[in-house]
Image 1 (tube, helix red, strand yellow):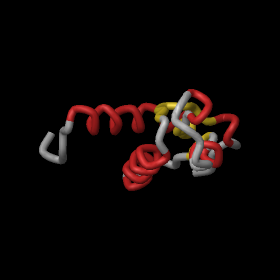
Image 2 (cartoon, helix red, strand yellow):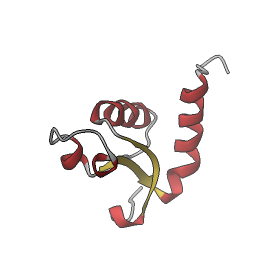
Image 3 (cartoon, helix red, strand yellow):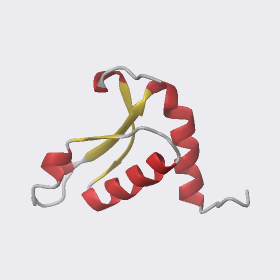
Image 4 (tube, helix red, strand yellow):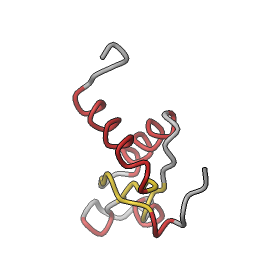
Length: 82
């Protein structure tokens, strides 16, 4: 499946740490959800945490429902047993 350019993707998660962004990105990608980090270079530049360092995870518009479901599962700690 081909996806539109990054401008056609939707932000579904944001954080102020690159480590958390990379962790969530890895979890989504493990479930076959393409992910792009927006402002990755700025967040990893070593600046103090703050709004200017926000890292947003974006996914293709058609993958939003699956990505949100996965994030909700992670938030509440549900595993494969549910």
